[in-house]
Amino acid sequence: MSQASQRVWFITGTSTGFGRDLAEYLLDKGEIVIATARRPPLLDDLVAKHPKDRLLPLSLDVTQPQQVVDAFAQAKVVFGRIDVVVNNAGLTNLGELESITEEKAKIIIDTNFWGATWVTREAIKFFRESNPPGAGGRLLQVGSIAGLVGLPGRSFYCASKHALEGLTAAVAAEIDPAWNIKLTVIEPGWFKTEITSKTTLSDPHPAYSDPNLPFTRIRNAWGTTISRGDSKKVVQVFEKVASLPDPPLHFVVGLDAVELAKKKLAELQASLDLYESWSEGLDRE
Image (tube, rainbow, N blue to C red; front, side, top):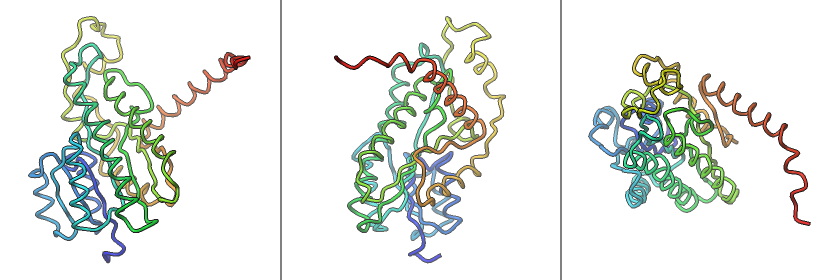
């Protein structure tokens, strides 16, 4: 693959999970990857396998805006352009709303929403001002089906992913089409990654001791439930989405996610049909 045909990918959170699997897949295909991680030594095995002209490992904590600016600046110095940014860094914690500490909640929101926001802002600027005029770029936001539906025991994770959905939709609506920047939120279901295997459970809140409550059942089965999805396969879908000439704003992936999205759409449509008339006659006289 010639350098002219190689795309340059900037991926956050590449030490584990979707980010690592995507980086490995793209490098094996001959693409160029800027792999960022809070702990760069976790990328040493990738560095040992791939040449410097195709892999740039960078230290990046997405919750630190200046680090985000610096990472994009380093990418520009080394490769001169970025074709695709994958906003992937994220984390979660399981527990009822009343059992999650403020400190843990802030970490989730700071990483999943504010961190993604700083990367989004810098990606838009880079695509517009650093890439060749009109070249634009693709921004893939790694969201979750939890950004479309509410899942028990994941209140702050859901909140962060819902916020990412709103941010992305607003940015997509406000940017100039002439910039040729395409945004897509990938909304995966449950795929076995490090974010699931390393997820911690908060101590149970005594008010939620009923074994029939949805999250109590999840808590009791945690560690034995088998996920349906293969993360190494789904990142190939990420690459396909980035290659679409006119990608959708939302891309639900995983059969479990598709089922949940369809259910949400049906519930919303039923509510609209039932209560649409309540909005009539509300204009000022």
